[in-house]
Image (cartoon, rainbow, N blue to C red; front, side, top):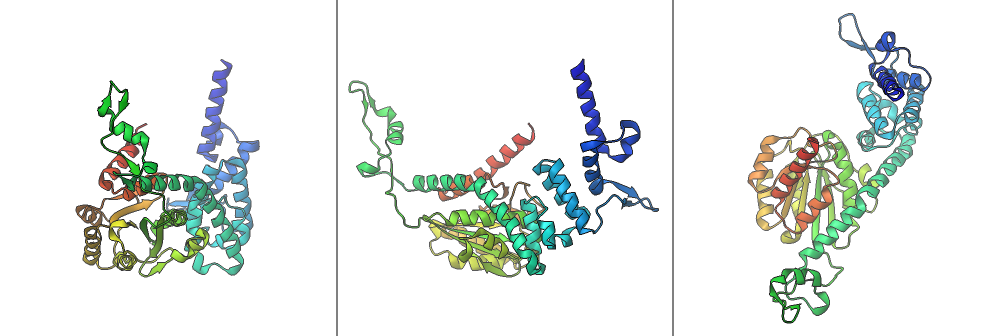
Length: 397
């Protein structure tokens, strides 16, 4: 009975925090730590109504006071887990127009670093005062290090394994025989009287080499809607560039094209080399990327864009057709983030699919497997379908 009462009290407590001040009459006043949490939530989410009945912020809001906002940021980091803090920060930037305050170093010292905050900072790069840039770089570096810990090992393992499988040869030297795969491939030739397998086909890998085996070009749309994708793509590009068996290039674009390949040794510099916002000229970006591809059948071209083309659409599609005809493995990602597909140009996505290039959203955790599939020249349409099925299955559970 006591357990039941405790569960009921906890439910009421949570509902009080969810409903805020208007529930005080029926659910009581939030006090102590709950009172502090309630005040932090009210400052962001409580709204009243003006004389016309339209929503209007109450006086509990954060307003434009930097000290007040800094205290609020400290409060939410104390009272809520980091995942909730990140959501509240993003909501504060959107609902209370706090972008301007992020240009102040003391504000950046109070925030919880995350991918979306980095995207916001990169969009402010051109107007950011020098006094703020060091603090902003530290925020970006913290997020980059978090992402590298998340993705680096998995990416290197997936890519290295795919390169080894792609280099498999059917007449290996003795030292290069993969005995496990050879035995499994020849089990039907087991000789019971000799109690052994007589292999008709040897399976092995090519000798390990430091030579470049694949060229990878990441071509990333840096329009404002692609902010999270730009951050993830920059970190992935740096990880891929650390593999000697790959020659990795990173090209970012809006209406202009910028090659950031020379900066891939430092992903923070890569991200600050982007200019989020502006228009989109995919055709121009593909035209530049074509110049980087000198070994078509050993090249992978990854276009990361929502496909809203502000340039020459027919020319863009013609260039993609040229790449695929030459043997380039072309991948089109509508997003490279945890949020799924954003708004995108469905007509251009369908046109790419007709050329054999599926356009789909990819999470960072699935990207290493996608690169492995591309290296092995597997069917990427089938890969995209399996990825969609996994997402759908996860959503139903």
